[in-house]
Structures are given as C-alpha cells and as structure tokens.
Image 1 (cartoon, rainbow, N blue to C red):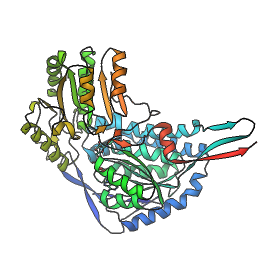
Image 2: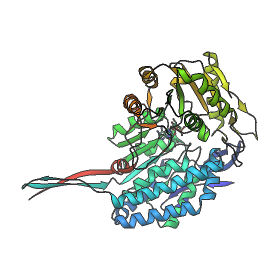
Image 3: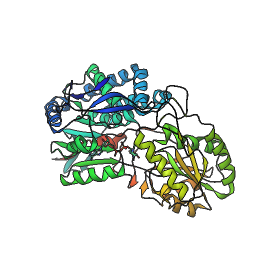
Length: 475
Ligand code: NAD
C-alpha cells in the first residue's frame, strides 16, 4: 500500500493525528493508497518551515530561482511515464492523455515561470524634472495553493510554479481525491535542489486542513481552483483578513456553432471539447448551440462520432477512462435522470458502464431542453452535453449568457467579423474562435461572474503572488 505523507521542510512527515484517508483507483474501485489526514498541528509545523525558509528563498537571485525551477521541469520530463501512470491510477483518466497533456503541461508550467521571472520588467513613472517612481514587486511571504482533482498535477503546478518563481514559500493542498502526483513531485523538488521549507504539501480534507490553511494569519494569499460553492466559502474567509485571493471556479461553457462554420472541424473539435478527460475539464463545452439551418446535419454527424468513442480501462487505448469517484458517478447519473424527467431526449449514452468495478459512464448527448432547465444551468463536470438550436446572433448571445457562469466559450464561424462581435458580447473570461484548449501561458486565464475572481497566467500570476510597492525618488 502506498502511503502519501505530508512534505514539510524538505522531509516526509506522518500526520500528527496518525490518521489516514483512503485513496481509491477509480478504474477498479479499489483503495491503492493511504492519504495523511492533516490537522492544525501539521499546519503549524508547515507554517514554521515555510516562514523559516522565506528569507533565504526570497533573497536568491532571479537566475538562481530560475535554475532550480528549470531543473524541476527537467525532472518532471525525465519521470514523465511514471507520473502519467500515477495520474491515471489516481484520477481514472487515460494514461495516454496524462502522457500527452497533464504531465508535459506540469513541466511547461515550471519552465514558463522559470523563464518569465528572468524576462519580467516593472514600471517606472517619471515626473519630468521632479522625481521618478518605480514599482517594486516583492514576494508576499507564505502563500497557500489549493487545487482540484480533475487535472491534478497540471493545476497544482500552475499555482505553485508562479508562487515559487516570485520568491514566496508555499503550503499547498492538493485534492484529497487525487493527491498522488503532488506527493511524487515533492521528491523531485528535493532532487532539483529546492531548499527545505520552500515548498510544503499538506494532505487531507478540504473542509478541515484546507479551511485551516485559508484561515491561518501567517498565510498571506490563497490561490484556489475548485467548485464555485467552495470558492464562496474561501472568498468570505479570506475577506475577513483582507487576504489576497484568486478564485478559479466552475463553468457551464457554451459552444456556438454558426451555419457558416468549417463543418468538419467544428464537429470533430466539439467531440473533443465535450468529452476529453471524461468531460472533467473546467473548459469543456457542455451546452452546444447550433444554428437552425445545420442543426439536424450537425446533430447526426456529432452523435455518430460520440457513439464511436471508446470508454474503458484507462491503461489501454481508449478515448474516455473512469470518472474520478463513485460519488461523482452518482452525481453525473442523477443529472442525466433529471434531464430525462425534464423532457430531454437522450441521443447517445445515458448510462453507467459496468466494467472492472470502476466508475465508468457513457458519453452522453441530450436534446429537447431549453437553456433554463437544470442540466443547462448547473455544472455537471462529466461526459454529458446538450444540443440546442438557435436562430441568430442575438438569440445565441442571450442563450450563451443565461447561466450564472462565465468561464470559457467556443465560437465556430468562418465570418470573423461576426466572430469578434459575438465574442465581445459573451460574458466569459476565455473565448476560443474556431479552436478549443489552444493555450498560450502568457494570456490571462480565469472566469467572469460565478466562475471566479482574478486571473492566472503570465504576468497576472506573478502580480498576484507579489505586493506592488511604489518608491518615489526626488530628483
Ligand atoms: P472542490 O471545490 O470540491 O475542491 C477543490 C479543492 O478545495 C480541494 O483540494 C478541496 O480539498 C479543497 N477544499 C474544499 N473545501 C475547502 C474549504 N472549505 N477550504 C479550503 N479548501 C477546501 O472542487 P473539486 O470537486 O475538487 O473540483 C471540481 C471543480 O473545480 C469544478 O467545479 C470545476 O469547474 C472546478 N475547476 C475550475 C477550474 C478553473 O480554472 N476555473 C479548473 C479546474 C476545475
């Protein structure tokens, strides 16, 4: 049995409580690891290790920090296969997907921010003949990073890489559903030469150790990715201490398909944007709006390809693996049942798959529901999409904006004038035109409305993890 202990001050520590949680492999429904169930005592040790390491880490030159983070990126690459297998075992995603997307992206996150700090500049405001102001951006101190289960190492590193690059010491809490690759990363951090205490990882339940981390007065900022409900709790707690907070939350993303789209590309990419990672990506499109003129044609081509998707053992060549947990499988299935009782017609899928005792669900396509029914308002976060027809631009803009969310949207049209006009009216932090998941790590990443507060990526992330200080010098 694998034992996932906390990582504090460069060493692995058993939880002070002596308690562990079960970690289940969703592909087979079996416990494969024990996870430290951390408490306030573990947090105190981590805070003390992180505070103690801050002076040395924050005073390293940019080149020194950059070199260590590049080395960590190298080590992720050298261990790609083992990390990809661990990610799949923990999450249920196809190994091939982890090998192609999750782990290379974790490496890229470190590489990107290791280079970004070298190339970053700051502002100077000159008062001609009187004074010069310059903005110093100093690290905050000890910061907290809390990440979800869907892209475990990818999102974990998306937070800790900029935090560390900017000179902070980190206490990170990966999801208790998928803690394995964050645990493996700690060993690599030591090998890369990250000084003890600079990165600390505590495991356990969100409502317990996660909440304690958010509430701790020594923790100066919280970068959180997860559900909107959790984000609300964290935002309220952080506000009480005027703590900096970045919230990357849920979505109910629209895909808008105009009748002048490149049909083949639109169908194929929409299959991917619906079902990659079992639909468990915050950026997956779950509401597909199709212009009336091509509705039937698009539906037929889309459903045919969805029915051809292969679901199965994530260690083999499949399109979809297992859902992350039994609870999540139940949740996804209950949304599909509700959609049926609301009058939805299931065109593909709609059922669990009995296989190896794991948590498998068919890729599911539903039509016949309006934009206000439950499945079109709430985040399912699984392999379930709905199809809805629309008449014109005004109609689809209003439908696309009809949920409390505003994370990502996709627009398919060969008319670029129309694409820009529609993009500017969809309330969404990220818009893809004729593509999906095309990511440039320099761009601002995050959601509007209930999808979040603040932005990650590039300079936005480095700014979040630093405190600007204006220094005015009289000439
Ligand atoms: P979740 O909110 O249940 O948990 C996320 C993390 O927060 C976990 O580590 C959990 O242990 C921790 N947590 C839970 N309660 C906490 C509390 N009170 N205080 C501190 N920490 C707490 O989310 P999840 O189920 O792990 O992830 C799925 C959600 O994440 C979906 O809603 C999805 O859309 C969202 N997500 C958003 C993005 C984005 O970039 N916007 C990316 C990926 C996932």
